[in-house]
Picture 1 (cartoon, rainbow, N blue to C red):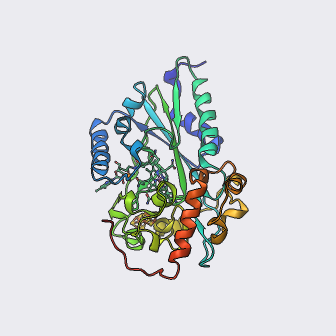
Picture 2 (cartoon, helix red, strand yellow):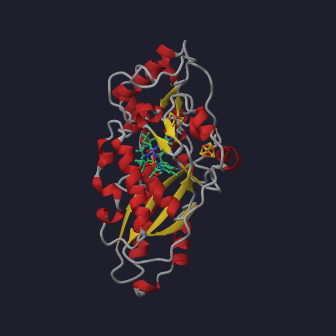
Picture 3 (tube, rainbow, N blue to C red):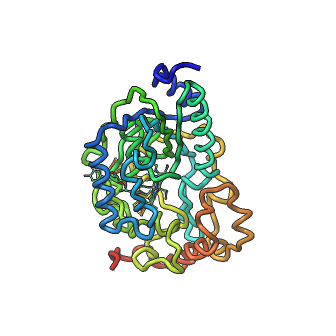
Length: 326
Ligand code: B12
Ligand code: SF4
Ligand code: SF4
């Protein structure tokens, strides 16, 4: 055992890289003005109703990391590249599943590595305590990634890294001892507006602000209603699980995406070109068999059926004019 105070940021990063994380950085937790700035933005997003039916986004602990874990002294933010070199097609009978869901559930893959990092950290000194999370706690993953220098929050609101573009999952380990922080990442969107221009439903309400009510990713994954709204259905253009349009058009992804070395992120064969008529009749048994250990299990059989049917019903009218939600 070594005293907690002698654990260095360099050692932590070496161990995180050894465990397979592609990017790692450290953020301090004591910049109260920065906390207040992000808490205000979150509050404004909620006040505008941009979280749609995701009531869990209003958990008050999300506003400040100390409300989640009072002992936190530093945040170790990590990113894992999930890009694989497959593309979506244009066949109107085939659905599009977004890249995040093609392979094995990212929560499981990151959690395994985060748990190993946590255990290693706790073995490095008496009294060292940790908590880890990947999209599983009321923590703003993207804000911590930017603060820890992994990348910047782009105008489409995803974190973009210089090495891998935005095709990265984010997670973090919170630790109760201070570590030397990295500098926050600077923003490199410049005057570009490609993501805003490409979004078919106008969901990027303003640069950096996504209104879930208008987002295809929200409606195909999170919306549990029996039918999709009229301002979404005509614009699906094949998407049945998530949406990658704003990331596909981003010049950083077009130039810097790299194939991942995580074999489990490579697509399950059925996920690359799913047959829409088949999905429109997906049974519970098919669903169980088709999406083992997959993040796509969040989308229940009736949602798959609904999403596929909405695509089939609207495929004759792919250029329907955009109408904002009521
Ligand atoms: C809720 C949620 C969603 C919702 C809402 C999306 C959203 N933008 O909030 C829905 C269901 C739509 C969604 C969709 C997707 N999601 Co999601 N989602 C989340 C979740 C759980 C919370 C995000 C959040 O805190 N939103 C609240 C708002 C207020 O935060 P924000 O949009 O990030 O806004 C910040 C900045 O944009 C900035 N900001 C806001 N206003 C302004 C104004 C100015 C002037 C400036 C400069 C900045 C600024 O400040 C805000 C924070 O302070 C995170 C996991 C987590 N725990 O963090 C995953 C997460 C963001 N999702 C992720 C992914 C992969 C996706 C999809 C790509 C999946 C897909 N292919 O379909 C899409 C992308 C859609 C999009 N363009 O955002 C990844 C993103 C990885 C990355 N590289 O960034 C995350 C981090 C999960 C993970 N652990 O990897 N998601
Ligand atoms: S995920 Fe699709 S619908 Fe949502 S903001 Fe991006 S382009 Fe628009
Ligand atoms: S498309 Fe352009 S504006 Fe949008 S996130 Fe990428 S660089 Fe930023």
